[in-house]
Amino acid sequence: QVQLVESGGGLVQPGGSLRLSCAASGRTFSSYAMAWFRQAPGKEREFVAAINWGGGSTYYADSVKGRFTISRDNAKNTVYLQMNSLKSEDTARYCCAAARWGDPSDTDAVYDYWGQGTQVTVSS
Image 1 (cartoon, rainbow, N blue to C red):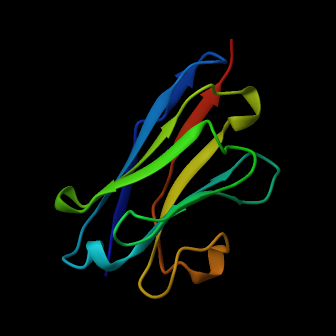
Image 2 (tube, one colour; image 1 turned 45 degrees about the vertical axis):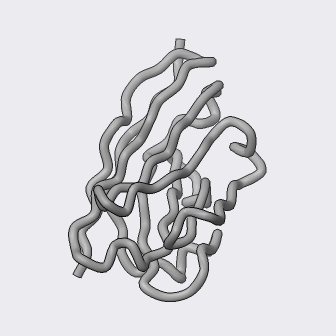
């Protein structure tokens, strides 16, 4: 069993930056593909970014490409999401997810473990 705990959310002005962290328990974190998803009120959950087990391959939603960066530190069992040039439409609850098998995916069905999320609000 893997537990994921997100942190780093908050209120930020448009154009600002935040760095989200997702700390994972378990000895096999380094073998998992990891991803960030987000869900705004009244909207479906959507893919944000994903990273493979070693960190060498990353994937992004078109809406965040060039602004967000996903990374991981396997020694610390942590995955990060650096968010720059934030927009009001980035306001959502951000959750990290872990997949025991396979490559990173933008499909939430492949992920086995989910965190509770951290709220990001972009507003002036």
